[in-house]
Length: 509
Image (cartoon, rainbow, N blue to C red; front, side, top):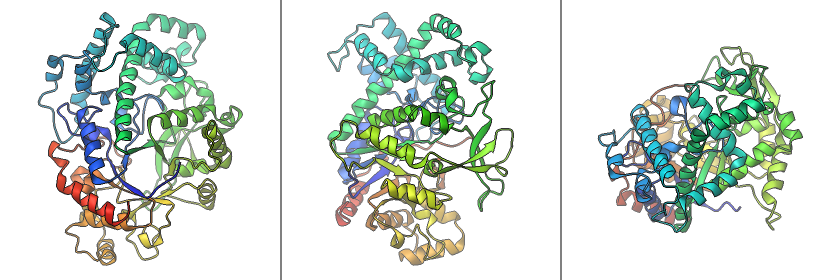
């Protein structure tokens, strides 16, 4: 694909407004697309769309392929005859400005259970918005996605049958995927397996419809792939040979980053690490399937922790900090050559550029830079990181066009939150560099990256709204209180759209 100079907004669907306690893929998502199109912005960046579990983090999902059923729109279920108004009334009086996952999830599960029950009792019901039969559509979806859906639905059914615990606590025959045990489980849990498959059918049906609408409005969706997968996931359980695990299925080494100026003991993420030798022998089949599936859902992919493809930090699983890990060489060019070859299949463009943004923040070494340059991938520039001095690479005068500029990301404070808490010398440098007094600091940052040479300029919706630290999406390495922020109904304002529209015109975005 060609990266064209443009701009966009970072907003995860859970943060959309609406009456059901959590943003979803229903009317408010279409309203946001309409508003975004009216601004002249061409990009909607989101976080990973997978099914979340412990901690509600979109970066710790039960599958690298599945969608999050909590994003399924109740309004759409009502339209298709799979929900009643009474079902939707159960969502009354939920918080509007934050997601209370503890309140919302049980209600969403109850709604989906009822939808599945109606599907079972009358599977040939005609959808009110389409001439196709529900059962035929569902069967087709299951056949098309069997390569990941069969194992995922079985994994979720087994997880439910085992009280929600991690798969390493299951019976040994199921842990080690003995054929007879899997056959027995598929038979005994057939209805539950079908239910989890049906939830995926509903999610992808709604997502594909929304994405098609965005395309009509000339909006590209920028998705996100975490480099590592969660240990308690269908991916690890069904592909143990692709990871460094012991005989019981537990990781022998885990992911993280070494100590630095921000953390004296480093960061211990705990994700299992890939056995890249096995991936290479299998011609990276699992990864290629993952990237292909992701690009069927979005237009551009942000690859999280890109440096891990050049070299990654390996920590013994029994360690409680990241202090005594070691650097290991990643798959590098061999992997990305395979990605290019796979995506080129069927395209006549010999100069095809990968539709990938490299998240290249953190410790960047020459091998990472070489990988970026070899495959012509844009990296990221976060303006909040810029204000230490004139030679800081995150200042716009040090940008090259091949980069994506952000005021901040989901892991940062909001612009106003940063300005309220940053060291005094950084605040003063920011004011001096930008030539501002700070009273409109969020939009000062927006205007600055929009004017830069960066091919994409993207701002979180919280900065467009000029919100403070209370609207921060995530505090890295903390549990609780994250991923909760939501817009209000009245936030999609015309004055904000007009401001972005003017800025996009002024800066040729």
